Image (cartoon, rainbow, N blue to C red):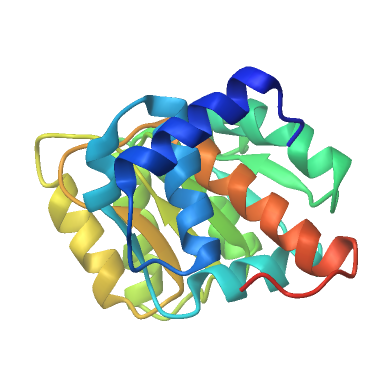
Amino acid sequence: MEWHPTDAQSLAIIDREIGEHTWSPAEYEIVRRVIYLTADFEYKSLIRFSDQALQSGAAALAARTTIVVDVPMVQVGIAPYIQQTFANPVYCSMEAITRPQKEKTRTAWGIETLARRYPEGIFVVGQSQTALTSLVELIEAEEIRPALVIGTPAGFVDVDVAKARLNDSLVPHIRIEGRKGSAVVAVAIVNGLVDLAWQAYGQESSAVF
């Protein structure tokens, strides 16, 4: 990311307000990115990293693994970072060609279709709770084994259940606990991870994980 003086000032404010913490340097970089884009410090207590989530995600990015997202907002938000670094293919569930399904939303059916096509991909669900539920169902059925799942949809009806099932799935993931979340949060997480992975792999510098 190309930082400007105002960005640095904002990050310094975040660092002061958070103070001491127990995150790894890589995890903290993701946390501060989310807070920076949302101006919401509550996320520091809501973001969760599974074991090896960042390492698995960074390795998958470096291997040019396909990225599947739920909505165009996420696709547009991460595309510049991806294009300037690893150039992974990025597909959106809403653009997937599918046959009509009354029982599923367009995003859910689209992500299910793409998940079967790219079972070991990186999946980013920033907005659609139904897409996250469909993705988790495929994981539970052992039809797919993603390299990383980022789950940040907001919602009031059972979104916490979908996120809890993601936690129980044992696949590498980053999620936002509870009702809060958004596509903006997902974009912040992905772009932060791309920067970290580029430092570790793309530029052959010392590992940051």
